[in-house]
Image (cartoon, rainbow, N blue to C red; front, top):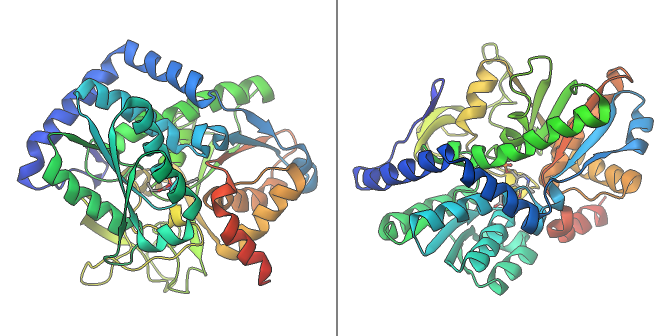
Length: 400
Ligand SMILES: CC/C=C(/N=C/c1c(COP(=O)(O)O)cnc(C)c1O)C(=O)O
């Protein structure tokens, strides 16, 4: 369960048997071709896959460089890439014979997706959500409850994603015989990162086939926003073996990397010795895994900030920490202000409304498209749609 120096499964003794069982079920499912076919068929009939790869002609013309393609994970059922992971996990829960699922959520997309899957599979469902996120993603809270899930507002800590994860783990330790924890991203103790990345790789498999068909050759660069890292790992896996394809992760720059109010774990750190004086992430172990965390000198988790609830998290996938350390993935950050501008441009130019999280990837792609040759192409992974963010966006534009 390691990716270079990162990952592992730092879980208490009491959970070892549960993790052993989970690993056994996952390994068996991975080895069973019928399981992956069942998953692909379900994603086709229930979640509109394959999702389109849309050529953004107006944005391409505006920047005058690479052809800009958008991978439309917003067109999944429930509106984000989270659907890929939860439906796969649902099939796994069926194989394990469990009847209850729990999950953490920040943006509420993973929560809605898990509640949707539970309704379809007939599982009992409890979602843990930071009180602050309950307030800023109300449309999703409404749907989770309407779909039959119990939403538990979490009032400990910073009342955001990391606190929701802590509460979900507490529930799981107390109910692990009946309950599966549907981790929403490629973080947490092994095998969670591996499982989530395995289901999300469907994005990259489709995108590679689609770009070769539409553009005739591999893209120069692929951009994805990074919260825990699951939509990024999903699309990146389609191109990891193609060294000529540059992979760019975009983290939450919040109010700026020197503001102390951001959620950038890797982008803030130049790969050389840290000389920019920006308080950066450091290696640590928390929430069951080892990665680069935004923590203080005592190893206590810092409060993060992002306009996008789904990126507002202290940890980053051990897979991405390893790919970044090896130089295979370049990490950048986009500020809240840049995100709003890119969102507005995408809406006005292409009639596409990205989620605030996804808009971070658009920011970096817009900065770089013009410097690439017109014969080249780039792909932006649009992880979700912006409907959930209507109040945040309205507020941002009201106060210019
Ligand atoms: C698992 C907690 C993260 C959530 N969402 C994260 C998210 C993200 C960031 O998550 P990753 O892809 O795992 O980095 C990107 N795009 C959208 C639309 C998201 O909703 C959630 O609760 O919905």
